Image (cartoon, rainbow over all chains, first blue to last red; front, top):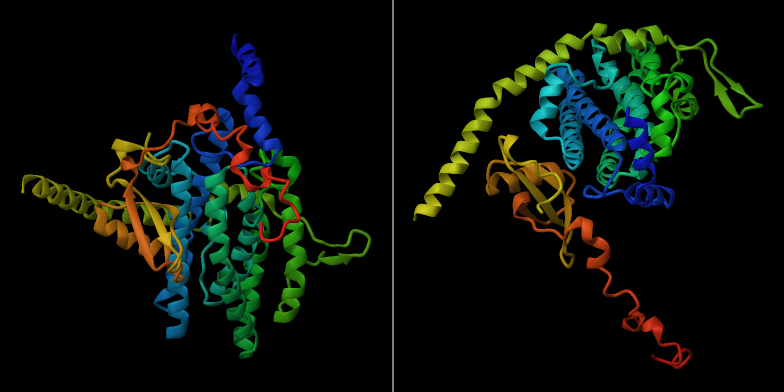
Length: 322
Length: 102
């Protein structure tokens, strides 16, 4: 049983002290710096899951590109899906600086070894869902991501800064889709309301389990990867949503939602965490479809990647020969 | 010592570091990295990935494996020479304070 001794030694090592000092001073940790193994592992898991979420997140919206109601909406949706591909790539790059290679991350995604945000395992059956995804899902994502721009790991923070700059258009275009529907016919208003009814609670659960059920959160906060707790971020999100819903004329589907003068926040009802864990365990509406489609795209693209590589190798060989 | 994301053999395509000049008169600044089979595709991918909103007027790409960096373990000693040489900064010279145009 040498582990505790080793841990105690590691705690007091010069490297550990330097790491602690940098975290304490709010300095950034950069790729080649010494860092505790658990810090590295936590980051690899979090950043790669985040990247996978962006990549899988293209699917619910890609589903609507061909059926978007106007050329303008198609163009907007394509730009948004292209951004998500880009965000996935920024994040894969950041994860790679921690010593994991991209092929491994791709494999983890298509074999189901890695998780991604459960929200993308819900289906998007109506056009209004493009509005709800932008307003609620991207809204929750922004709320979560803005503090990550200050994450203690430099490459992660830099990727998040770039992502946040691009993400705000996503939320606004979603809000506008819903606003337009709410200004339309009774059937359109119903479609918008019905869609928000489906997406509201899952969006709130995007912040993760309540603080008392989220043991790793504390450690991530001590490492300054995470700056606010799940419940704090969720509260912030609800407080922002209520006035926005009023502008839309949409009802948020929670009978317990009401202003609490004393707290200066909105109170809201309990969420169905059993559903959250069910989806997380792979039993959501679309888990199998999402991963199968990703796998097919990856495998169908293999010959293109290999051909491009072979062409590049031949070009180099010919240049060397001449 | 190559750039940090370069993980070598397992990748189908090599890693490239991307530098963007955001407007005329400014230097190229590191924007991030990407994978591409060759330099032509690397520049195109960089355009699609890092300039979707007109963030650049010029792109450089460098194969990550071609980058040489200082030894990260020796950063203290390696960069210590300016320490104690405050006389290299204008702020060291205080006698001339309040003298115009100095």
